[in-house]
Image (cartoon, rainbow, N blue to C red; front, side, top):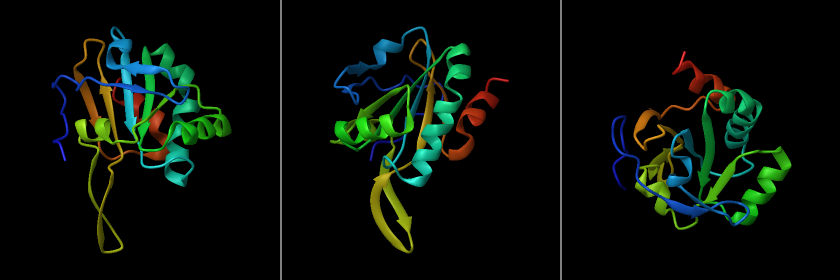
Amino acid sequence: MATRPEPGDKAPPFSSKDQSGQEISLDNFKGKKLILYFYPKDNTPGCTAEACSLRDGYDRLLEAGFAVVGVSPDSEKSHINFAKKHDLPFHLIADTDKELLKKYGAWGEKKMYGKTYEGVIRTTFIISGDGTIEHVIPKVDTKNHTEQIMALYN
């Protein structure tokens, strides 16, 4: 597992496809603050709550100068269904090879019910318009994620 970038670091560059097959790269967001959030799986309770919180706060986030991109190891097809089902207005990157997850230190060892396994470490990065990481949120409040992000800027 790569180490997680921290505030003040340059964000690792990326170029990946979203749910509609569109190429999305860090360069697309120059001049905007980017909320890059990593989540384990489409249509699971916590991931749905997080996505819906960002959806419900999307207009406020846009007004504050943010763009939103979600990343999980799910397929483009899974992302299409997830975005349609929950009316998600932002890009979802299908990181099936886990390259982006690993670059951002969001893939690694987890423990559940005494078992150790590899998986997605739910983490949100806020990247400034010049590509510098401003904030890392390692303990995501899935139901109130928009509020959690906005509180960093108030």
